[in-house]
Structures are given as C-alpha cells and as structure tokens.
Length: 276
Image (tube, rainbow, N blue to C red; front, side, top):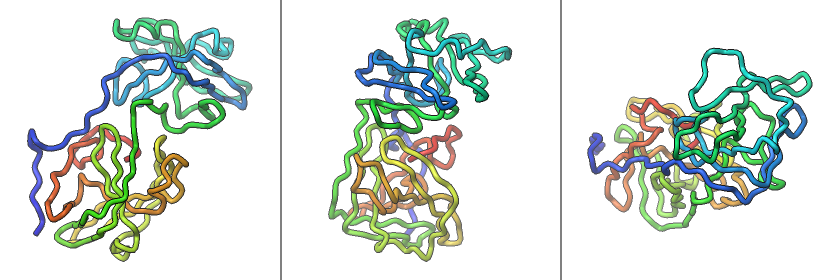
C-alpha cells in the first residue's frame, strides 16, 4: 500500500553547515582564457551552501589580490551590484567573462577576513585546481564526508503502489548533512519501467551522474533515478549502481516505510541544487 507523506516537525530535513571562512592549506589555481588568473597557496575557503551575502551558492575560494592577475579585471558597469562586493569583468585575450569576478569591499563582520579578497564565478572559468587535480562544481569542504557501506538491508522502492526496485544487497551512501542514499544493483531494478533522459549533473564528491525517468502506477516522475557510471576515484563503490530520490518515492527499509526527507530536491521546494 502506498504511504501518505506530509511534512512534519519530525520529518528529516536538509541541514547545511553554517557558513564559515578559514585558511586553506591547498595550492589553488584558476584558469581562464587558457591562462592562470589566480595562483595562491594562501587562499581562504568560504564554506557556504545556498544563498548568502556573496555571489554563488556553493563553497568557493577567495584569493589575495597579490595572487590574482588584477590587470585582467575591470569594474563592471552594471547597476546590479551587491553591497558586499564590487563585480568585475574578467578579460584575457579575446575571452571575456562579464561579472565573472568580484572584490569583497564591505563584508559582514563574521566574514571580515575576506575584505579585499577576490573570487571568481565558478562556472565561467575554464577550470579550478587543487594541487594538480581539477575540481568541479564548487570547492570541497574538508568536513564533508561521503562514506559508502555495503549492506544486507532489505530495501524496496515503490511508485504509485508499483515496486520499482527490491534488493538485499544495497550500498548505503552516508553524506554529511544529506539523507542516506540507497544505491541498488541494476539487476535488482525494474529497468523496463525506466527511461533514460538527457540530464547530466556533476558532484564534486562523486562525479558525473546520468538519469532516468520512471513510469509506474499511472504516473511519470522525471529524472527520478541517477547513477554514476564512472565516479571519481574517492568513491568507486557506487559505480554503475542506481539510486532513487527518497524525496519522491515510497522507500521501505527492512519493512518500514521511511519518511520523505525535506531537501532541495523535494518536489515542493523552490530552491534547487543540481547534483544529489
């Protein structure tokens, strides 16, 4: 029988880390227009998830001006400015990123260490690097863990009263501040009820995900299922396994229907994140 889910005070909720600023021990570089525009061994990490006083939604690095190609920056002429920053246009050769960078001019007291520092709009850059490895989507918070454990729990996933997957050999992914995710072998998934989609997302902790929609019980849910066919080296255990959004299905674990967590991927939440 399909469970009826409503949001309650007891419902698991997405709980991001409170914003913080701290020195990073990592050698960080930013590439744009085929050239390095920031190169620093003394960058500051802003641990921010979601909207805040500075541009962007994810953790990112801030650089001392001495470690930035400041001659490549020019003040942005638009009137749409934030109180805390001065937007800059970044130009290297023929490549231009309007509002692609900013200088912190009036940070809130809790972020005073960022005064005068420079950061860049992540998606407009050619690449970000920690040491010799490229990183994607946003900076990785050092306190953010991803643990994947093989399990023998009985996991059943249903939509509209129809079982989509059932297994006793899931891999449970425990990620800081996020719901437990249940990764299931494709042999234990009713693949005939799934349709591949064109959606692709990137996660800095897992890699590039591909998606399927599911049709069952008289309804279709777009991009309900995802998999990492070639995860990053830190998370090889989830390779090729399938995972369903807990937020949108009836998930039974050891015979108990699980409450649907309230996260940015819930159906009625306006603020969306790209990767699960």
